[in-house]
Length: 202
Image (cartoon, rainbow, N blue to C red; front, side, top):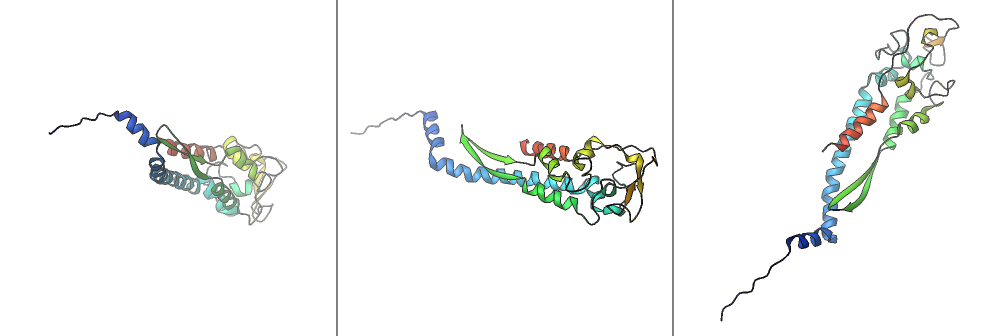
């Protein structure tokens, strides 16, 4: 006697069991992590590319003898000297190392068929505090990182003088020697915003 047996199944229920199985989740972690790390590393590379190519970074890196290529000082001085960095100091190298150490990537959790990852990027306020009093402008109690974006007064009293001052590039005059005002520009805040934007893009 020939006969057949028909078996029906609930497709959604089976898929639900599969997606909750340990094997499925573990295999998914390997694939998802590979994709997430690739995106994280790319976004991080773009962040540091923007950092090293920024006009403020370049000007400070050139030291007390640099020209004011950033345009923030109206050509009257340079950022290294105006911020009062000690002669021979390397504030950009210190900042870059700090930023590098502030990025972190780790697994989050798995829920509703989604693998999540936790990404930590530098905090603007904490980074600003890191450089207060460590490099330049310790007499103001402010961060030069914050000053780049908010501005500084006193540029009218800055006198460029090679070999003088803590930076070896200028001194503060008792009387106004020019009528130039400090121009601001987006710096760290914009880089951090772009990093987050790149991470969140699908």
